[in-house]
Length: 75
Image 1 (cartoon, rainbow, N blue to C red):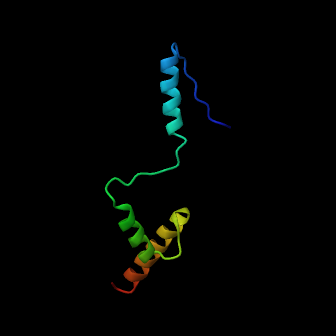
Image 2: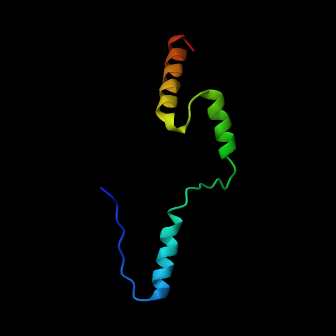
Image 3: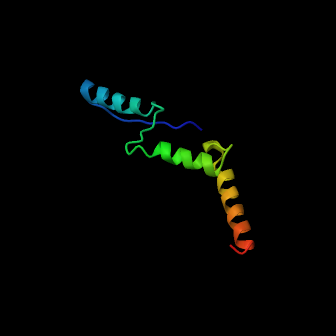
């Protein structure tokens, strides 16, 4: 089922403003204002090589298994 968005406008100015706002949702970019994304990516690549953000669940499984193995080994 497709999502819909509806509004009523009474002036061309309001219509244009709303279309501009809706246009912002079409952009596929993200912002890293603090610049921590590269640091996060570096740690992710070191701790979980070969996995991507698509495989986030796999990263957590690996993390839990490593922790369990460490605990079982007496660490």
